[in-house]
Image 1 (cartoon, helix red, strand yellow):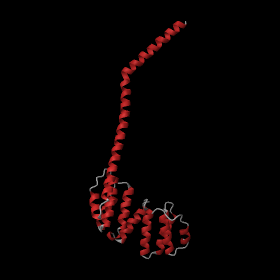
Image 2 (cartoon, helix red, strand yellow):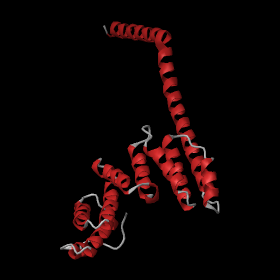
Image 3 (cartoon, rainbow, N blue to C red):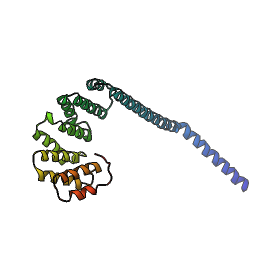
Image 4 (spheres, rainbow, N blue to C red):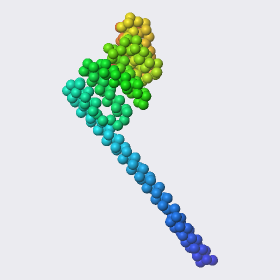
Length: 229
């Protein structure tokens, strides 16, 4: 009986191996193709990442080289020739150009460049908000009413720059003699959970200068002497 059982097991194992070999001959190419696709896909992904990193580095090097020029207009011209590969990178280059245009006394041209970014619907909102905020700071290119409308738009939209816009509006209120409105805006800045220490300190000291109650206590409550904007 043991010899018979051993013989049956050997035959059964041989049949299994024969079936396995037939399946491999028939469908083995599928497994090989799957492995090739996985390896090829990973290699392609790594190549794309390396290409993107190389392009980003080239753009960064070109920006740094452009900013080494001695004169603002020379930096403007150099930045105009920087090659970018993404809308975001182009927006950064354009904002740098706008800053150099301002330094060269070309505020109107700078405002035009910033407005082009601010109205580009294909860009992420943060780029558009930054450009709109910078454009609104160029007072000589806008009337007071237009500046106020743009800044209030940033505040009401919940933009990450809403507190900076609120600060500018408070300064405009002070210039217009609207003391209570300015204090109200500054208090909103102070109470916002996202306010930086630097901005909170500026708001507190403006309130103190305006004679707001408890402003001095709020100023001493600001931690540290440094902080963001």
